[in-house]
Image (cartoon, rainbow, N blue to C red; front, side):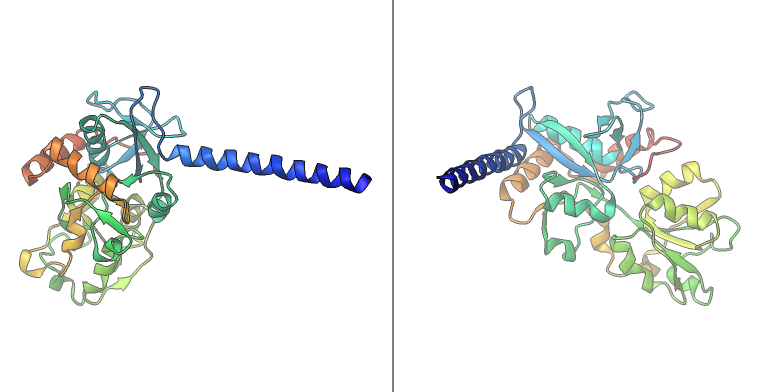
Length: 298
């Protein structure tokens, strides 16, 4: 008799546990299709929030020119920059509410894989390697790659990569980016440590740990605004990085096979009309006006 009662209690406990687990599962599933209090669908976007002028973190809810910064999910901080401005326009065009999720660059695709957010809008180059795992929209920005060096180093007058031959420079860039694959094109260079953020890369040059940083021109311009000891080296067309086109095309990334979200993003980009380089540069110039003197890193 006791054994029968014990068995029934065990079964009831197991059933209760299964209901709890089922409840948790349905909650997690529901989060993927959450709607805001407004009744609108939510556009959940992964952003590094540490890569000015594309994106950065700030404590104020408005930018220096009065634009609306976007609350960072789960924090008391705010995000803005070119990427966030694009995300805001997309959400408006698609009649969705925007939700910005901050992620370190090294793990930003992991958050997409896990379903923490539905898209990545974070200055991500549309590379062949990434396209094996993710789908991309057409570019919403085209950038140019360049070098950043320290003033007085004797490297400011470099016109092309061949000018670095015999100079034995130490080079660096941001971890997990397509720039890493470009470093070995610099002749006679020593590959130094690469860093989690571009800010750390610029600090390495400022401190003499590295001689050259490989980045894009907008990021370099933003760095020079707060680092007057640095200089940008624009490479001649005939003596620049080869096969770097992948790192110049910035697209929105979605999970592989997520056709619904991809089509939605393509439709949104068409609606906001961000198709010409002129329009892209105009929006980037607006973002530059709001880059804070100090940005909170990842």
